[in-house]
Length: 155
Image 1 (cartoon, rainbow, N blue to C red):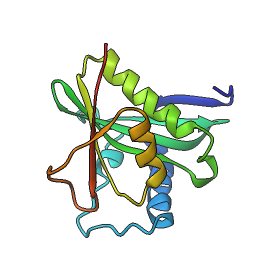
Image 2: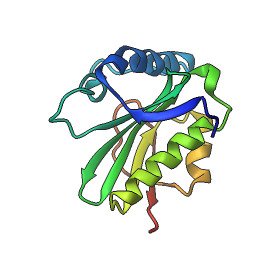
Image 3: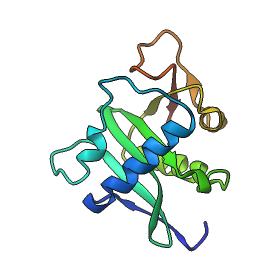
Image 4: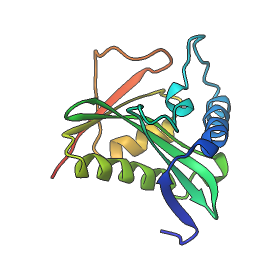
């Protein structure tokens, strides 16, 4: 990995930048948000009682992407969000973030990772499939999502 790239746990000063990346990506892909859309997982980055784990990806100390991981149950982790700035896409950084999520799950004894996404994120859908995520049919999805995937974690 490029020496100018670093992954670290998110901190409170990252909240605004992470939200800009999220909403910029959703706008870029013309994804409409439901009225009750929540970013509480991002707003609670600095909350000691939260269950979400947020990592930010930096280039030269500037946040360029992030992932949000949420334990669903003892053996299943949700990849809630994986986003990069538009200028950083196409550089294998989404692959790097996804591999970091899979490694985190494995090291923390999760047996699977689940995620929901929108089909408009064609590059992300392709990335998930390339990494062995299997589409889940007939599962209830959160508003704004039309696809769900799961990957079993090998140890």
